[in-house]
Length: 375
Image (cartoon, rainbow, N blue to C red; front, top):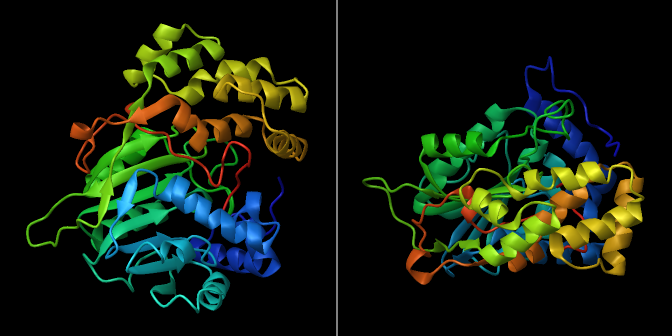
């Protein structure tokens, strides 16, 4: 899909300046579309998608107390901040685009407990050790340099109280020619790379899901520190694989069921890698048939008419058909069918787990029926 204003940052001494300019232009042209390509066709659908994403993705497995203070990195015009304001005592939003911030302030002028700031890559308007929850969604995948993402990770460490929660999504696909080349196609990470950076920065990784897809999620807890206030306002409980469901999934993808379950539980592979054979076998399959087969393989059902039509349009518009598989693996429906709640004794904010054993979060209002795109 051709995205306007996606200029290369190479040779620029200040890639943040190009990011700001291009996102200002996108905001002026069609802010709703560029923030949420899959749900930006109408105001009603756009704002409703924010409520869905908050419930199904941002707060999946996370409970916020009424006195919680939260921060959104890359808030756009406030699509998620608006519903978040009803769950927290105070919410901050930051965005690199002046135009997005201007529109967010106008859109949220009736929400007194939200404040929005323009950022150059830091959370400098937010006091140290003052927050319980920091999150980011479909933002890091547009950032063209990893040093900028690292700055946000460091800033999350700074503003969070001890045991505060940081949840974010990044692009986990293997690096390719398109990765990191402009202000739309941003950096990509291997799961191990991000895990190591988070731990080195002062986080304890609680959950890593969606590895090898565009919608890789990390949930981390800021380590306690002498003299730093502790947070009890954000709590995380994870989930584990349902082994019989995992075995059935392996069989549908053409693998030995028992072996599939063992390899995933050991962290030797992930669902997306297991789907490579399916994708390769259907490179030339007609779009409608491909979407039907993908639903059956990943979700064990036929697509509904809206989902079928959506993904056919995506493929026909030039979006890689791998994206269908990524979205289905990243959907709340996939999670519900293949994961189960962690036993109560293990469901604590401090529980550490291998990425492969935890609940699969996902892309946007991405019920399996809607597709994603970027924010």
